[in-house]
Figure 1 (cartoon, rainbow, N blue to C red):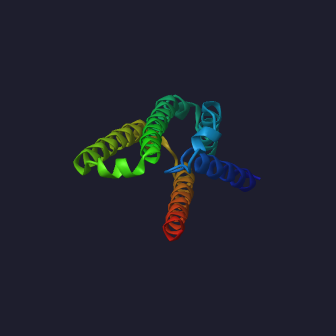
Figure 2 (figure 1 turned 90 degrees about the vertical axis):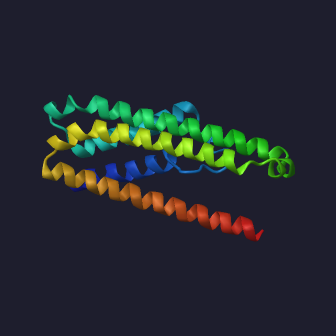
Length: 172
Protein backbone atom coordinates (compact mmCIF):
# COMPACT_ATOMS: atom_id res chain seq x y z
CA UNK A 1 0.00 0.00 0.00
CA UNK A 2 2.84 2.36 0.89
CA UNK A 3 4.48 1.72 -2.49
CA UNK A 4 1.23 2.54 -4.32
CA UNK A 5 0.84 5.75 -2.33
CA UNK A 6 4.47 6.65 -2.97
CA UNK A 7 4.06 5.99 -6.70
CA UNK A 8 0.96 8.17 -6.81
CA UNK A 9 2.66 10.96 -4.91
CA UNK A 10 5.70 10.69 -7.14
CA UNK A 11 3.53 10.97 -10.25
CA UNK A 12 1.84 14.06 -8.82
CA UNK A 13 5.21 15.52 -7.86
CA UNK A 14 6.63 14.96 -11.33
CA UNK A 15 3.57 16.46 -13.00
CA UNK A 16 3.48 19.46 -10.71
CA UNK A 17 7.19 20.09 -10.98
CA UNK A 18 7.17 19.91 -14.78
CA UNK A 19 4.41 22.48 -15.04
CA UNK A 20 5.51 24.74 -12.25
CA UNK A 21 9.22 24.67 -12.90
CA UNK A 22 9.74 24.54 -16.64
CA UNK A 23 13.11 26.16 -17.23
CA UNK A 24 11.96 28.29 -20.15
CA UNK A 25 8.24 28.22 -20.68
CA UNK A 26 6.96 28.19 -24.21
CA UNK A 27 5.47 31.40 -25.50
CA UNK A 28 2.41 32.24 -23.46
CA UNK A 29 2.89 29.45 -20.91
CA UNK A 30 2.60 31.86 -18.02
CA UNK A 31 -0.44 33.42 -19.68
CA UNK A 32 -2.16 30.03 -19.74
CA UNK A 33 -1.48 29.43 -16.06
CA UNK A 34 -2.84 32.04 -13.72
CA UNK A 35 -1.06 33.03 -10.54
CA UNK A 36 -3.59 30.88 -8.68
CA UNK A 37 -2.74 27.91 -10.93
CA UNK A 38 0.98 28.38 -10.33
CA UNK A 39 0.39 28.66 -6.59
CA UNK A 40 -1.76 25.52 -6.64
CA UNK A 41 0.99 23.62 -8.46
CA UNK A 42 3.56 24.87 -5.97
CA UNK A 43 1.29 23.82 -3.10
CA UNK A 44 0.90 20.37 -4.65
CA UNK A 45 4.66 19.97 -5.12
CA UNK A 46 5.38 21.01 -1.55
CA UNK A 47 2.62 18.78 -0.16
CA UNK A 48 3.88 15.78 -2.12
CA UNK A 49 7.40 16.34 -0.86
CA UNK A 50 6.21 16.70 2.70
CA UNK A 51 3.97 13.63 2.44
CA UNK A 52 6.75 11.53 0.92
CA UNK A 53 9.07 12.44 3.79
CA UNK A 54 6.45 11.47 6.41
CA UNK A 55 7.79 13.96 8.92
CA UNK A 56 7.62 13.30 12.64
CA UNK A 57 6.04 15.93 14.90
CA UNK A 58 9.53 17.12 15.89
CA UNK A 59 10.56 17.39 12.23
CA UNK A 60 7.32 19.24 11.41
CA UNK A 61 8.60 22.13 13.51
CA UNK A 62 11.50 22.57 11.06
CA UNK A 63 9.30 22.41 7.95
CA UNK A 64 8.00 26.04 7.82
CA UNK A 65 11.50 27.42 7.14
CA UNK A 66 11.97 24.90 4.31
CA UNK A 67 8.60 25.70 2.79
CA UNK A 68 9.21 29.46 3.01
CA UNK A 69 12.59 29.06 1.27
CA UNK A 70 11.05 26.91 -1.48
CA UNK A 71 8.31 29.47 -2.07
CA UNK A 72 10.76 32.41 -2.05
CA UNK A 73 12.98 30.67 -4.59
CA UNK A 74 10.03 29.92 -6.87
CA UNK A 75 8.70 33.47 -6.60
CA UNK A 76 12.09 34.90 -7.54
CA UNK A 77 12.25 32.45 -10.45
CA UNK A 78 8.83 33.52 -11.69
CA UNK A 79 9.92 37.15 -11.53
CA UNK A 80 13.06 36.37 -13.58
CA UNK A 81 10.97 34.52 -16.18
CA UNK A 82 8.51 37.41 -16.39
CA UNK A 83 11.41 39.82 -16.90
CA UNK A 84 12.88 37.63 -19.63
CA UNK A 85 9.50 37.35 -21.34
CA UNK A 86 9.23 41.13 -21.30
CA UNK A 87 12.65 41.53 -22.87
CA UNK A 88 11.95 38.88 -25.49
CA UNK A 89 8.57 40.47 -26.21
CA UNK A 90 10.18 43.85 -26.88
CA UNK A 91 12.81 42.21 -29.10
CA UNK A 92 10.09 40.45 -31.11
CA UNK A 93 8.39 43.77 -31.83
CA UNK A 94 11.41 44.97 -33.78
CA UNK A 95 13.96 42.15 -34.07
CA UNK A 96 16.24 43.94 -36.53
CA UNK A 97 16.54 46.97 -34.25
CA UNK A 98 17.01 44.73 -31.20
CA UNK A 99 19.90 42.91 -32.87
CA UNK A 100 21.44 46.16 -34.07
CA UNK A 101 21.24 47.76 -30.61
CA UNK A 102 22.32 44.76 -28.56
CA UNK A 103 25.07 45.25 -26.02
CA UNK A 104 26.86 41.99 -25.16
CA UNK A 105 28.47 43.47 -22.05
CA UNK A 106 25.10 44.49 -20.62
CA UNK A 107 23.78 41.03 -21.51
CA UNK A 108 26.63 39.39 -19.60
CA UNK A 109 26.01 41.68 -16.63
CA UNK A 110 22.29 40.87 -16.61
CA UNK A 111 23.10 37.17 -16.90
CA UNK A 112 25.62 37.39 -14.05
CA UNK A 113 23.06 39.17 -11.86
CA UNK A 114 20.45 36.51 -12.64
CA UNK A 115 22.89 33.71 -11.84
CA UNK A 116 23.93 35.43 -8.60
CA UNK A 117 20.25 35.70 -7.61
CA UNK A 118 19.67 32.03 -8.43
CA UNK A 119 22.75 31.07 -6.42
CA UNK A 120 21.63 33.14 -3.43
CA UNK A 121 18.13 31.61 -3.58
CA UNK A 122 19.51 28.09 -3.79
CA UNK A 123 21.88 28.78 -0.89
CA UNK A 124 18.97 30.05 1.24
CA UNK A 125 16.96 26.95 0.40
CA UNK A 126 19.89 24.63 1.20
CA UNK A 127 20.43 26.46 4.49
CA UNK A 128 16.75 26.03 5.35
CA UNK A 129 16.88 22.31 4.52
CA UNK A 130 20.05 21.62 6.54
CA UNK A 131 18.52 21.43 10.06
CA UNK A 132 15.64 19.27 8.83
CA UNK A 133 17.86 17.00 6.76
CA UNK A 134 20.03 16.28 9.79
CA UNK A 135 16.99 14.88 11.60
CA UNK A 136 15.79 12.63 8.76
CA UNK A 137 15.96 8.87 9.15
CA UNK A 138 17.83 6.82 6.55
CA UNK A 139 14.47 5.85 5.02
CA UNK A 140 13.38 9.51 4.77
CA UNK A 141 16.72 10.42 3.20
CA UNK A 142 16.27 7.60 0.68
CA UNK A 143 12.81 8.88 -0.29
CA UNK A 144 14.14 12.43 -0.57
CA UNK A 145 16.95 11.18 -2.78
CA UNK A 146 14.48 9.32 -5.02
CA UNK A 147 12.37 12.45 -5.39
CA UNK A 148 15.48 14.43 -6.29
CA UNK A 149 16.41 11.88 -8.96
CA UNK A 150 12.93 12.09 -10.47
CA UNK A 151 13.12 15.88 -10.58
CA UNK A 152 16.60 15.80 -12.14
CA UNK A 153 15.41 13.29 -14.75
CA UNK A 154 12.39 15.43 -15.59
CA UNK A 155 14.51 18.58 -15.84
CA UNK A 156 16.94 16.81 -18.17
CA UNK A 157 14.02 15.62 -20.33
CA UNK A 158 12.60 19.16 -20.51
CA UNK A 159 16.02 20.53 -21.47
CA UNK A 160 16.39 17.95 -24.24
CA UNK A 161 12.87 18.73 -25.46
CA UNK A 162 13.73 22.44 -25.64
CA UNK A 163 16.94 21.67 -27.53
CA UNK A 164 14.98 19.64 -30.07
CA UNK A 165 12.41 22.40 -30.45
CA UNK A 166 15.16 24.98 -30.95
CA UNK A 167 16.82 22.76 -33.57
CA UNK A 168 13.50 22.38 -35.40
CA UNK A 169 12.94 26.15 -35.26
CA UNK A 170 16.41 26.68 -36.75
CA UNK A 171 15.59 24.27 -39.60
CA UNK A 172 12.34 26.08 -40.45
